[in-house]
Amino acid sequence: ALANPLTAHYGITHGLAVGLMLPHVVRFNSPVVGSLYGKLAEDVALCAAGDPSAGDYLAARVTSLVEASGSPTCLATCGVDRALLPQLAVEAAKQWTGTFNPRSVDEASLLELYEAAFDSP
Image (tube, rainbow, N blue to C red; front, side):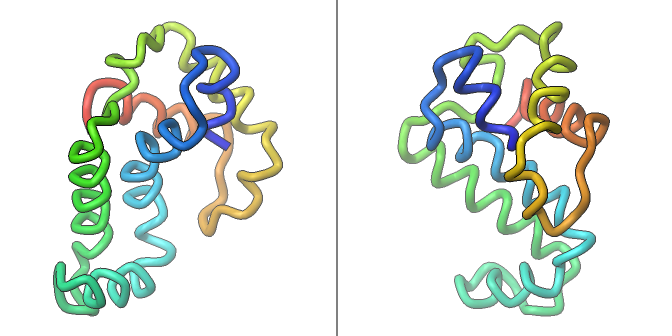
């Protein structure tokens, strides 16, 4: 849901937009699917399955992979205008793909995700 408005407004390739937003989405979803993240983090030797920080470890790993690929890790480096983040959130909230997210999303939560991705990976 978050990637499509970035592609539409800024021409950011869909896969790059997904990679850029994914660490933030992982952190956002962690309270709901933390046990699944724990198993995944254990499988890739980041931490024990029961570690409450598993989502953070996974998000950091995704960021490192995006960085290693030479892809952007924040919206600011992609030329995204901070003033348009609320409009992007409105558009993202209308995407049917958001209905598959394990944690419910709305305009406010999507805006928080865009804001989190603006300056930092």
